[in-house]
Amino acid sequence: MSDDQLVRALGEWRRPAVPLIDALAGAVRDAVLDGRLRTGSALPAERRLASVLGISRGTVTAALDRLRDGGWVHTRHGSASTVRLPAAAAERIAPISATGETSSLDLRRAVPAAPQAAYLAATRRAVDRLAPLLAQDGEPGPGLPELRALIAERYTREGLPTRPEQILITSGARAALALLCAQLRPRVAAVETPTFFDALHVLRGAGARPVGCRVTTEGWDLDQLDDALRAAHGGLGYLVPDFHNPTGALMTAATRRTVAALAARHGVTLIVDETMRDLDLRDAPRPQPRIRRAVLIGSASKAVWGGLRIGWIRGTARFIGELAGNPLCGPLSAAPMQQMVAVELLGDPDTVLMRRRAELRRQRDHLSGLLAGDDRWRFTVPPGGLALWLRLAGIRADTVVERARAHRLDLTPGPRFAADATLTHHVRVPFTPPPAVLDDIAAALDHACRR
Image 1: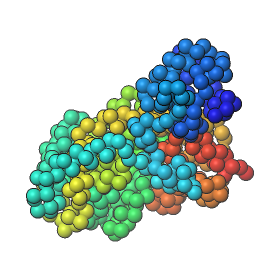
Image 2: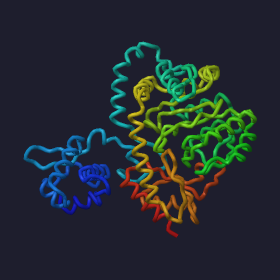
Image 3: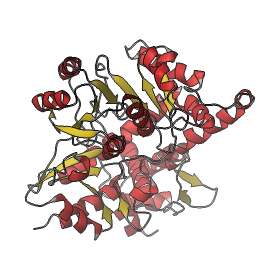
Image 4: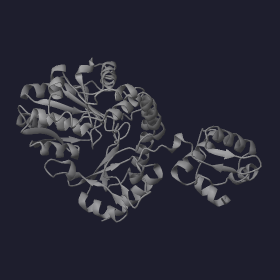
């Protein structure tokens, strides 16, 4: 590559109070991840590189040594150093559909790609341990004992004592909600406005009429929630208190106590969806206490991958036993092989989660910085989750979505998240893509919101 190309790719790489070696190595890594430096590109010789960047050759040598150690640069004796992508860095947060590598940037679902290295390694370990399972009848039942015990132990470790018989494995969170609806058969369901659109589909498909209560990035409207739970008397309430989808709001401990009391007063079974709970992007993640007496839904879809069709329900042992006897329990269960892979991944989730949180935090802050200070929209930087929830000023969400599509960007307008087709001036913008793609997203929003 030419000197000018390299300078443009690295950009303003020097950082105040950051040693030059660290700053240069970091700039090369970022340029590779963002696509500004193509893998396989040959870097200039060390002496020339030092001259181009205005630093000593010793600094260049030390930075390249660090990059070689990390697998970012490969050097053959007598040949130029070439840029490459380490296997660990090949894992992406966003799926290909949300990175611009296809015909459009599809952000209609805020979903991560699989952590490839960890997932493949877990699959190999699961295959190695599969023989005893293959000798059994293969009937799903409430789930593999090993997986139920693993999930129960995690709840217990987080302060909610749980036994394996209080866990039932399903083929994802939507399957868990569908099974609960089939068991409880609600006529009315209290939901948040906005809420996850797939949950609305499941509830309506089960014959329930959703009644909404207002949620903003600042929290829950408890008066409206009281009214919604009263309307759902004897039915169910579906809530996402942890990094709420799509607002990103986190319910306080005091509000959780109030919600538990309201549900008890109105005889409503609370179903709490904890799919986003692991995506705590605060500097010091600290889980909030659970809502008392709620039935909990969990899933591996956001923390690991949507293709790992593993969800679960946590309730009383008696209730879980009743669910296991429901005719839909079998069809909505997870395949044994998938459960074995989940055992391997969820047994030590911290490695995957720490990297996910770090990258999502960086991408959230990058997109927030790009969109901040513009009077065409308002938003609150969420403490967790996968998306920004924009309140548009003076323009409808459907207009923005239509205009954005002309710039190869597919978004979801607010009314899709509402039980009553409101929220016409809101749009969800996931921050799952890498920073370079987020730049394109911000530019597309700028064009889409011009008056």
